[in-house]
Amino acid sequence: MPRIVQVFDTTLRDGEQSPGASLNVKEKVEIARQLARLNVDVIEAGFPIASPGDFEAVKAIAEEVTGPTIAALARATKTDIDRAWEALRHARRPRIHTFIATSDIHMKYKLRKEPAQVLEMAVAAVKLAKSYVEDVEFSAEDATRSNPEFLKTVFEEVIKAGATVLNVPDTVGYATPQEFARLICYLKENVKGIDKVILSVHCHNDLGLAVANSLVAIENGAQQVECTVNGIGERAGNAALEEIVMALATRRDYYDAVTRVVTEQIYRTSRMVSTFTGIAVQVNKAIVGDNAFAHEAGIHQDGILKERTTYEIMTPESIGLTRSRLVLGKHSGRHAFAERLKELGYVLTNEEINRAYEEFIALADKKKEVSDRDIEAIVEGRHAVSQDRLSLDYLTVVSGNKTVPTATVRLYRDGQLVEEAACGDGPVDATYKAIDRITGERTQLVDYSIRAATSGKDALGEVVVKIRDNGNLFTGRGVSTDIIEASAIAYINAINKMLLNREYGQKAEPAPAEPASLGQ
Image 1: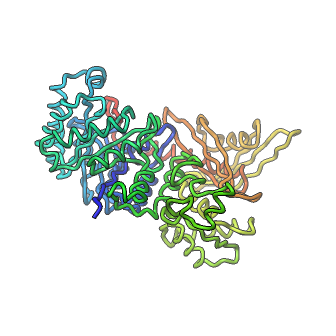
Image 2: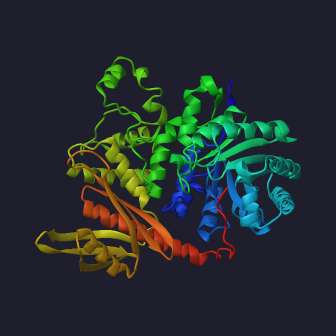
Image 3: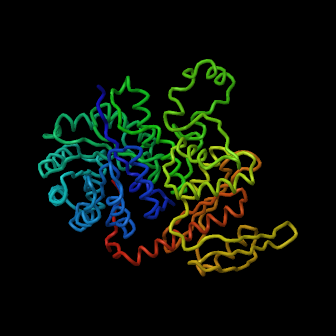
């Protein structure tokens, strides 16, 4: 029997640290529910002390999401650990994940503490966390640049203090696979009591080696791997969950290790995370990229037609893609539409299905055929709008190369219809200026991107915008056959998130004065 490797998903914590990624509470809960369907072992829901929004998200996930262990990150301080427990207290299976740096460079320049002080703080943190929960994870930040003997001492002492999981982070993506393998072997052979705990790894991708380092650690005895969906995360990102899981599944003969992940939910999870964060998946991304199962070369196509395994080492179906070419139209019934949603991996309430069906019928009136990608775009567009104070009612734009672009926009603002018009450098600029007049907000547009979400002349256009407000970035997404409408929806979506964030900021207590280090 192959051994089971636990999957610790940190998309909602480390993944959200990607530049430009911003998720509200509802989106985090929805992603957490999807991670539960994916059947990861642990969901790191956030860093409660970092911000009021993070605290609310961890609390909501702890209360509402069942199945996986729910973890919260905390520095090795009483304030952090108390706050983590406050957020986690209603979780069925809570874990406090505490960390402190152990490398000479971090201890000297960041912590400004001696090794003996760091050791004392690590032990005290684990003991305090253990007084709240049975399951305590300890991470030695920047472990791969730490003195191995000091790392060994720290791990031995936190095991005595009650740690149940030891994590070895390659915080800055510095290690090579050979070095990382040697470190894992050294710890397995020399840390007293390590056989009584779970040994975990957390690899960053600065040199493009995060997945390779994670796999070599598993090969040498690591029992838990920490990763993110689509490999998102700060700087160059983290080890990609889908790549590790499918590497173990496809090369089970080599690794003799598997995960509990329901691989058929991988594609759906990838799409949800990409949609909510506004971070597109590169087309040639392993496993979940658009080209991952595409074959253009004639030799490849000929081989695939004769025998799939000539050029495919895994099936599209194994990650939740379907090769069905069932096309729906405006005469398709609600039942057929609901069944198609189920086949595509969506788990929706009846009310959500009804709303999506109405949008499907409206789209089918504009397009002769509605494809799977159209349906995905419809559902993901529905998800993108949450707890709205603003919604689009009406939009008209006059534009041309010999006229001044003008937009008239009517929005529902807190249930009241408000209309404004504005001129601009182009139709999108005019639309955004009209929206700004309605909202009274002065937002800074940081990024605007547009792409075809589906194929054909009647393709759905997908617009992603990022706005800045008081140093915070908010991502909005809009989908429509009309790119100006999609642009308006995306901008309104981003403003809704900004307004929602302000509301949470007012309701919750302020963030700590001391800046929270998010690395590990």
